[in-house]
Amino acid sequence: MVDADIVKQLKGGLIVSCQALEDEPLYGSEIMAKMAYAAKLGGAAGIRANYAQDIKAIKEVVDLPVIGLIKRKYDGCPVYITPTMREVKDVVEAGADIVAIDATKSLKPDGKTTAEFIRDIKKTFDIMILADVSTYEEGMEAEKAGADMVSTTLSGYTPYSPKLEGPDFELVKRLAKDLRIPLIAEGRYWTPEEVVKALDLGAHAVVVGTAITRPKDITARFVRAIKLRS
Ligand SMILES: CC(=O)N[C@H](C=O)[C@@H](O)[C@H](O)[C@H](O)COP(=O)(O)O
Image (tube, rainbow, N blue to C red; front, side, top):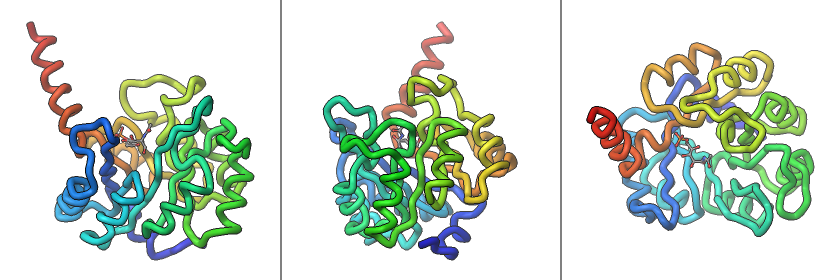
């Protein structure tokens, strides 16, 4: 069911993605909860988080809407963002307000299409669904299938979407114009100006992850600039 209060809380705001995989230096729920707390103090409107234990830890320290997901790889399947009902259940039980799922045209590990997967989630759980897409068509399909929001998360990460260095503004513009449900802008936002531009193009909210919560990548960006100088 759509929670109008949550949609309203996120409107025009910044959602900070606080994620560290097992092989990343900041892996650990305690650290991710501190990241989320810092984001809240900085004025974030919401948090995006991976893993049940991180979602739980974050929910204990911040009262912001949390978009939860579980990244899990299944052999031979390109879908890794909350790919099956098993991960959805864990996200729901961890207390997330919204579940983010891969809503690309790839079949899920159990052979379901995105539309079938969304239908099954709706039948089983009372949670809002954020459809992570890589193209305009996937966004429109997700809305038709019953998603509550769409995010541009996967643009640049499927073999058939454009490989841009920065955000996919064109996708934001087209989806924000044609969807009736909220469009979230996400993926490779590094500056406040880019975030403002996405909102001006009609995005409901913008997710920033790496540029705020992955110090290894932030450091590498500075170092790269220094190296280019010589
Ligand atoms: C493609 C993929 O797996 N994206 C993931 C989705 O949850 C995260 O690793 C990203 O950090 C997140 O989307 C935010 O994007 P950025 O870190 O570029 O601000």
